[in-house]
Length: 78
Image (cartoon, rainbow, N blue to C red; front, side, top):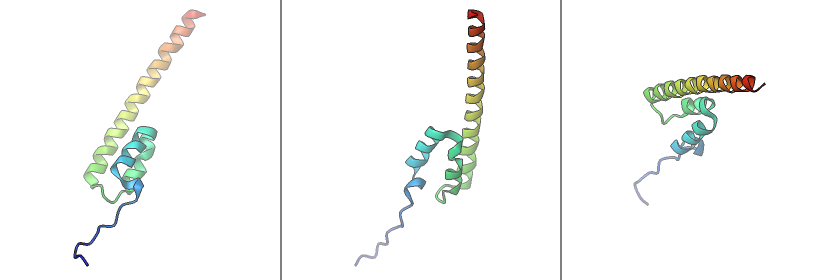
């Protein structure tokens, strides 16, 4: 017998790669997955949450602006 004890493995959904894929696929909807992860430090959770929320807001603004520009083009075509 060996004296080395194995660490219990974290569930697959708490692995870094799974969390990254979740953020890339569903954006801020993956925040609960981040906050429930016991392996992530509180400071990192806050930092990542702020970055994701700011990026989400910026993408919302860019999408809104793009739709407005497309609507203007359609109005000119009529």
